[in-house]
Amino acid sequence: MAGGGFLAARRELIESLVGRNLKIRYKGSALGFFWSLLTPLCFILIYAVFARLLKFGGLTPDYLQYLVCGIIAWQFTVGCLNDSLHSISGNANLVKKVFFPRVILPLSTALANLVNYILTFAVLMLYLVASGHARLGCGWLLVPAFAMHFALCLGLCCLCGTSNVFFRDTEHIVGVVSQAWFFTTPVMYPVSFQLDFLPAGIGWLAYLNPMTGILALYRKALLGHAIEAGGCPPAAAVAVSALVCAAVLVAGRQALRAGDARFGDVL
Image (cartoon, rainbow, N blue to C red; front, side, top):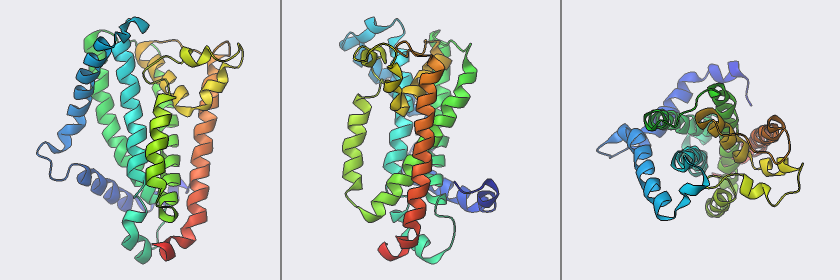
C-alpha cells in the first residue's frame, strides 16, 4: 500500500471522505449515528429468537453469544464489500479532476465502516459482560483479529472498487458470492462441522477462508473458545488465514495500480 508518510500528507482528504461516507450512511435518518448502537441490539434480539426457534442452543451453552460475535464481525466484512463497489465509480468527478493516490477512496470506505464497527463492537463487549459470558483472558488476540480483518476488508475494497469501474456486473457477482461465502464461513456453526470432512492433520485447509481464522480469534478473545484446527497447531491454522488476508491486501493494491491509469477514461 502507499507509504504511511504519503497518506499522512493527505490526512485531511482521508478524514473528509470518511466523514462524508459516515454522513451519507445516516442521511435523513431521525436517529442518525445512534443506529450504530441500536443495530447490534436488534441483532441480538433477532438471533435470540432465531436460536431458540431452531433449537441451536445445544451446539454450545453460549451459542447466542457465539452467534452474535460471528454475525457482527461478518457485518463489517459485507458492509465493506457493498460500500466499496461505488468507492471509485461513485467519485468520478474527483477522479477526473484531482490528482491524489486512488487508494484513498477504498481506504476511506474501509475506515468509515471500521468506525461503525468499533461502535458496534463496543455494544457487543457490553452485552457479553452483562450476560456473564465474557472470557477475556486472551483479550490480546483482538489485536491480530482486528489487524487481519481490516487488511482483508481493505484488500476487498480495492478489488471490488476497481473491478466495478470496468465490469458493472461486479455488483451482482459480489451479491451472489457474499451469500455463498457467508454459508461456507463458520458464522452460525463451529468450524468443527467443516473439519469433520477433512482428514486429520490438514485442518488448516478450512482456514484458507480468511474469515474462519478471524472469527476463531474473536471467539477465543471474547468467549474463551478453543481454536479448532483438526489436529494442526492452532497458531499455524490462524497463520494460514493471516497469509490469505495479506495476499488479498496485496492483490487489491496491485489491481488498483493496474486500473488507475484508465479510471479517468472509463469513468
